[in-house]
Length: 355
Image 1 (tube, rainbow, N blue to C red):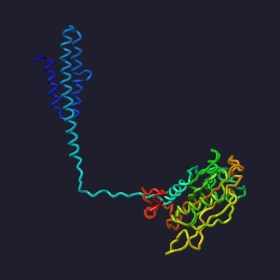
Image 2: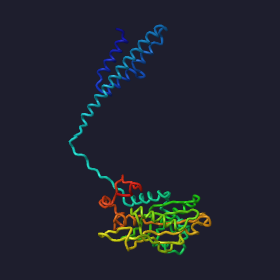
Image 3: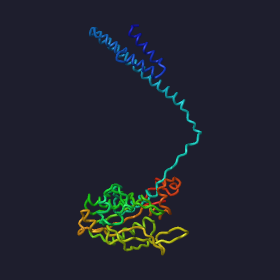
Image 4: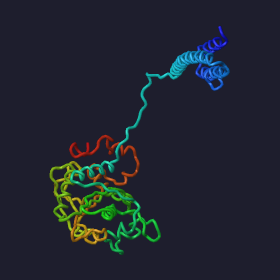
């Protein structure tokens, strides 16, 4: 047997006797590495005759192929052995009880925003959003609010600079301004979001949620506004009929303006919306003031429309029997577990808004 055959068999035996992956990788370097057995044998044939080169090269290639097959098979076997040993050490006691986990709930405010968005999407409204930090112009001036209006006082509004030019928005109406300035009519949008006012008691918090609605087009009138709100209130409270009245009011950004009351009665110490001889204010609305349209680059001679503002937290309180607005923001899991909603209970008109 030649020295070459002896070396080949020696390496073959070493591969077969390897006890772990680390050891077999070391042998791999000895055999197939840059300075290993195979390359070393190839380097020796440079001085041989052409016929001898072919003969020796063929032997080396056969040896390389044989050792590669042995190495691959041994390597796979070792990996399987190590995996099995690792699994044996990682014992799992299947008799142990499963770990408890808490299922989260959707906050009533988030649920009501989804419900309102679902209702208005059915009649062609799209959802727009805007920043919480606003300019005085978008929040007041563009909306036809006079300089001496009480809402602009510091005890009502959170200003963020000494010049009183930047503030936390007091309503989501600035989204109307932004939408009209960046596009062309017609507009048909709702704008839900957080708003801020310096106020705090059982029915008011410094931060609350509001939804603004806007519909601008040719030949829009008060009748369209009434029909839109009647549809929304019936769908939201899930009643077939709703008793409504529009009381004349005043808002700088609408003319004429109105506050909407809905009928209700008390049954079993609970408010029942839709009927009865009692009235409950629910939102403010009106026809968009021509000055607002002018400030937003919309021609009031061609276009007109209506706007309305809804307190989202207030609607949630009415629909789901929550009597203190402050509890919405106390981060009490027990409260959320009671009033919250299943994450899979996605509001849609065709299968119901809530469970």
